[in-house]
Length: 456
Image (cartoon, helix red, strand yellow):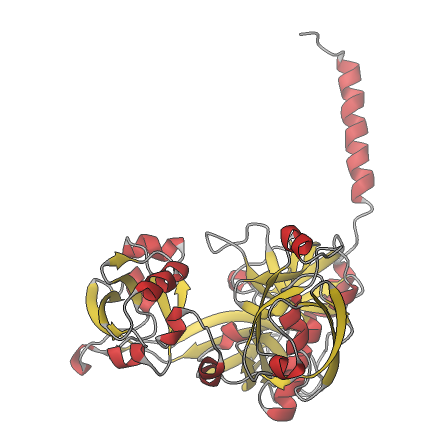
């Protein structure tokens, strides 16, 4: 192999270095932003008293419950959760994530100057993971709010917070994508970034280069629990909308239609004689719901709602949920190849129990009064088995059988369960009206069979 002359190699390296320097000189200077934004970013410590048993194991931490006698119980120091937040008004309103302060007995807000305040929880919303706090203070530094809709993919943004407890930390990255849907969290069109976000950053602001907050850093996608290049923020408009409802009503009023929907694929677009792959295909319109009374039908494809274009199906609940119940809006749909315009008055989303009672053709698990979730690899490794987690027990056969939240269902009628989907398929095949054995893992090493009767 022929070697290049040493002088040529030196010139090549010099050119490469100069090129990197030239490119680097075009990077934005974040120092001014950090100085301006820093005083309005806060660290949040949420603590709660908790009883625990003397024996602790990874599975104990997962189940977070036990059934010891009073003699076996002892009080431990309060558990504490660390997170971030930011001031949105001079008189002391602070935004953060719900999961940062969940079940807290005491919430402490620490300012950048070290001063601490005892915070009052004004409201928390499970649908968006937004929480609003209030501290008794005035003339506070405030971050100006921007518009996430104006963000462009590839644009620089900064993340502020306290990763792993290191408060007043700032990281930089770009907007990777917009309007991301994550699992069941259907009311949040997440901003995806590559800003380094880690535990403790939750609730901190995502800030654009013009010094305005555009989102709340909320989630990361990770197998290890640490940052691997994907982080997600709640759009600031949505968070402020929730905060204003907390101030005005003490709760969140969310728009509701009473439909189930799915993505329009290329094949479906062809089958419905559509020119573009867009919209939300309605696959179930609940009887007597708002959508049913307005004339929407199964097979309708929603193209626009309240003047907003539905590019992907997941955008429909974002748009509907932001509309005040009782508002009349225009809806554009495709039905049998024809474009039709309807007028619809948005309803209010019912409580979970009422919604379950009114919704037809729910998954089989819901007919039992169970809300289930798939387990992740970490839990699967801990219990050395597949299964599904009970996330909620409603009134019904499961409650009568003795199911509890955080039970892990391992088998039904001697069939091993690997996913929520498979659980529903198994239940659907069983004889109605008969009792079947269900094997659960209730606490570390404690297996138990429950008998649940399949509803008619």
